[in-house]
Length: 169
Image (cartoon, rainbow, N blue to C red):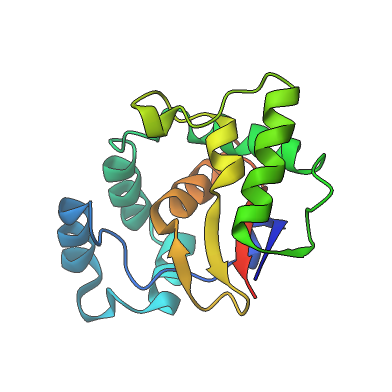
């Protein structure tokens, strides 16, 4: 079961290091910068808050991600749409959420599944598959890089302060 919710960026924990998987250059730069604290969520939080070099490294590599040019607009729009979905905040199976949001998107002429077909990342895509977290916010299943980028944008006043997320119950 899951709950799709709108939560503040500040309510989420910090990743166990950036650059895993698809971003090896970011991982290497962060390891060089943070050293042995690279995988420590508290060190990442502290560095984000107080260390301009940390933020420069994250921004440099994350702005190169294929989603970075539109993520603020996509997440902001999807979060606004989510407030119209009656299942928001209710325990549901993932397929229930996807079916319900698909119907809503079709009824309102809002694009979705564009990325799955090689197109741009659109609000309907994020509405159906938002970043996902554990109920205790101690595990981020998907979204560490997008969340960090949104935090960078929020810090400079160019990003949302709350976002739609999928919480594993």
